[in-house]
Length: 442
Image 1 (cartoon, one colour):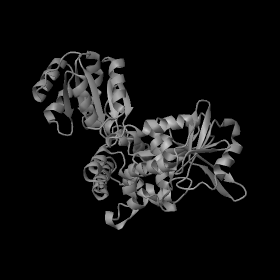
Image 2: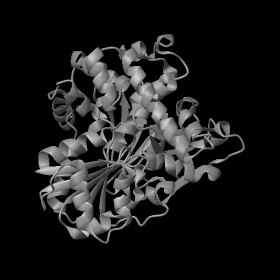
Image 3: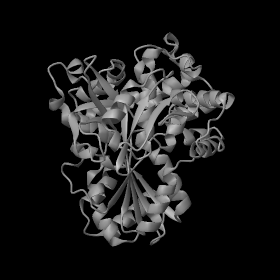
Image 4: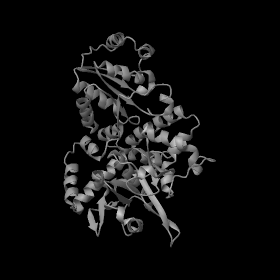
């Protein structure tokens, strides 16, 4: 059982809601939703019932077709799961609730009844096909569960010192020093390789063998592929997902839909992109046409980049057509000898970090008149009434022409300029050069 930050958010919900809302935890498959919910139910309530709708009988699912007699429903659940429910001291968990839409719809009546608390978990839960025939209850409070972040990963390895130390140095604006920096970077690259999916982390801890970790990640990717085909038998979702590494490697200013789905353009698959985003498996960065605090209002839905929600899975997806022994990406990345053309791994890591910290993803491109090529700012973060442009480098930082040009063009809108890279912390003029492991504090 690994310590997860979402537990504190669940505690806050229990205290603040006091039975007035149900908690819906969304996230991709194998991110640890069921595990954390079961732990929470065991520790925070006197008793609980966990209904896993993947395994539940048809009789159990049918209980939610008729809500006219809640006493009967509660009685049947207690008999089936051999657990006694206690008023205001018990919780009923609907695990994988997307597999029983009527149970999700029943949340309204169950919450109004008020006897027990309710927690739902779901994968691909927001896909329209799962909810099109039901009334979505307004009594749900939704929170998103993400893969383990770097601090949670270090917790799993028994390290509760590193990240608080890094936070202190970040707040003080001080570098680590070369020896400490090299050690932390190696730890961070290890995190990038293993990723934050609990099964992959467990495999690494038990085996210390990247090949076994890679097998786990391939299995998870296989589950995602199966899910994509269930909701989209045409295979478009799967194709869009599989092409993410190649699209980022192309250095194009947007995801080139036509090169993945022949005869299709971005306008044709906008709904597919939303479905991928809502599945929790994919992160979407939209082009901000007018970079500023109102980026959500001027984003271009047809210009976007896609990332995977877990960089460990991204590593495996990049080389999934090769066997583990046929590629040396693990050794190269762990030792800091990553080829230049694989720098997009750090870009994916940056996207994952920003999203897990509550930021929406935006980027911006504009024309360099002299060269007729585009300048590009990798990420834009809203900072009160201004914005912070972020440029990502996988190694050196000899130039940052895009950041400079953007700063000149939008100087009045900028609160802070950041270049994130693999070196130690420093400042140069008005640019903060942050090692990638410090971006978790943005």
